[in-house]
Amino acid sequence: MTITQIFSRTRGGLVVAACAVACAFTVASALAQTVAVVVNGQTVQFDQPPVERSGRVFVPLRGVFERLGASVVYDNGVINATGNGRTVQLRIGSTQATVDGQPQTIDVAPFLIGSRTLVPIRFISQSLGANVDWNNGTNTVTISSGGAGAQAVTLANLTPSSGAVVAAKSPAVSGTFSSSVDPNSVHITLDGRDVSSTTDISPTNFLFTPPYPLTPQSHTVRVTGKGTNGLGFDQSWSFTSGTSVTGNYINSVQPTNGNKVSSSFTLSGSTLPNSSVHIVAVPTQLVGGIFPVTSGTYVADLKADASGHFSQTVSVNTTPGGNVAVRVTSVAPTSLASKTVNLSYSS
Image (cartoon, rainbow, N blue to C red):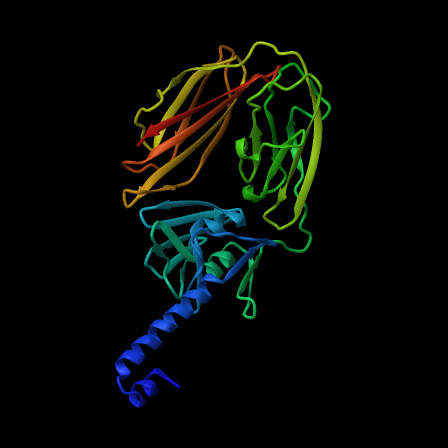
């Protein structure tokens, strides 16, 4: 029976009709919250549940973009994503989008719920070259970016190298991935101890500096996770730590901690001569003056000169009232002794 029929046949129909409408909205909301999203075989957990509008499922912005190997920059209502050789741009409240420079029209515009930006999952996934399937019986969206001939991720540029003997008691442990990975899926253990939470992990590499001295013996590093093609990987290698040598340091950093910076600034300082320097900068802006939202990540690798001086121009998307968190790690060339400092700037 339709709501109109209920209204016409029931005394006090206005109340009944209102109840029917309220129930309909309640059911629709419940259905939206039971939608499951699986990306490359991994179920995605959202802090803001998926929402259904006009037959389209919407999910939080970064929840799917980053699991498909794309980097995301959100600025003043404009969403820019780059990944898998493709670029996608959308605007809050607009049905006009751009994919690889070509205009596209979407059925329902992206929108905000609190501090979360929600985007149409099918359009985003397919724009990044992924396959999308909908199972009506289980309310599940399945996204796959892998294809025939997809290869599992391998590790390269390992530091310390496999079988190496190093003098430092706390050597920097790092490596690169042969192809893009989902950083959220990566787990790193050192001698069976999970150190993932204190490791810098990006889609292309990882870096961990032990905050404690290692004993002078063999140590095993294990790295597991999934590539953005959905294939899992599990690799290990071992090295031996030795006697401690002169520790590394990072001094005279400019701008000094707490200073104000613009969207482009020069970060400089001094460290052990010829050290490798790894810089990570994460700008954060406040949405509605309350909710912090990151807007892209800047990463750079460079070497200090023969006197230990290093300098790098950092370019990030800053907004008035936000801040920029910077992490600098220096690794000595021979001993692999490392030092990390964390800085915070206002913008």
